[in-house]
Length: 460
Image (cartoon, rainbow, N blue to C red; front, side):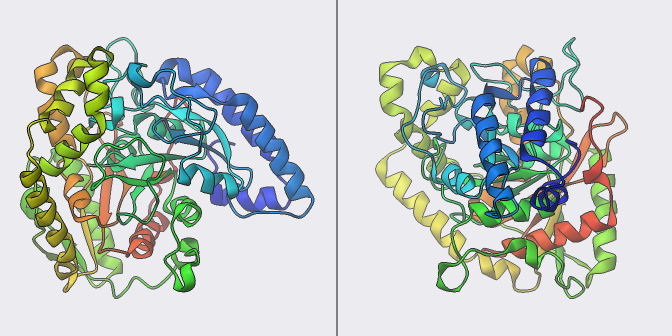
């Protein structure tokens, strides 16, 4: 049952052929069986989930179907505030923190009838791309979960969300993405993960990393499921503020799409197996569109704004309880301590100007294609054993994703192959601001032609 998608079960639930209670119990059983090995969840909300599933079942039976997420088990990254349920950010600092209000995205999903099975693990305070630092331990990749030293990362920071979806512990999860924290874990766990246009999904009630770069998005098994999730999560962008039906736009024509490949920078340091898989995906998409042209994309790796904003949020906590942070997380947070107000304002202005000019990058193309990550998932033990290698490795892992956080444009990672060792490989598709539906359409078209996204790890 867990191998089914939201799109695959939603109509069956509506027709009474599948029970929300039945699929929720199946997900909870999967969590009970696999979480001791994968460590994907920090908090499991079993009683709440069963109560919500029963309510959904009764509502649907009475003809009050709310939409495609009604009765669907999902999970939330544990920086998304949930009223009455602890939200820890995977830190000892927030170990006992229980919010009084739901984050906006949590409230929207609740109104859509989704069933919450729990809060997922992450890199502490979302400040890392490896997922190996956190008060509750690292999440193991379902495709390589050997705890005897061979366990690999899920990427970060939304590591638990990616593992939970890949291992069939829920049908979808919410992640956040400041430098790649949705797309990188999605790529490393063989699922679909989307970073929408900046601001399309509210970040209200989410523990921030850097306000100017934080995005909130869905992590699912398919682009179709991502479209269903995004429709419920997003702020209204249609005329009159109405919700956009992203799923209805998935099957639009792609034959006239102009695709760009930014080889400079994005194909540097690319692992040979990753490159081979991505090049094959590019060839396939070239055959169903107008073709490919090589383009240049501006890359700004300055971290002044991000580090200053992180410090602004954490300064009071650091002053009171520095010992409650992991040492490496604290070091990263303190990189913003010496940024002056003038330096921040100037760099923020540069960021705003770059974003205003982003549409110019798409004058001659519609969408961009790159590898999501240049390298396969590293071994957890190696990163933990050599702290000096952690930061450079994370920067490499996030190399191809971070530029699109700077630009604030929509980007998605979808599975496009596997290494010889059986580790997933991700293809990244990015588009201009507000072109979320177009990004999803091309991702969906690719998934109609391939079956990479239908493969599941043996552990599930």
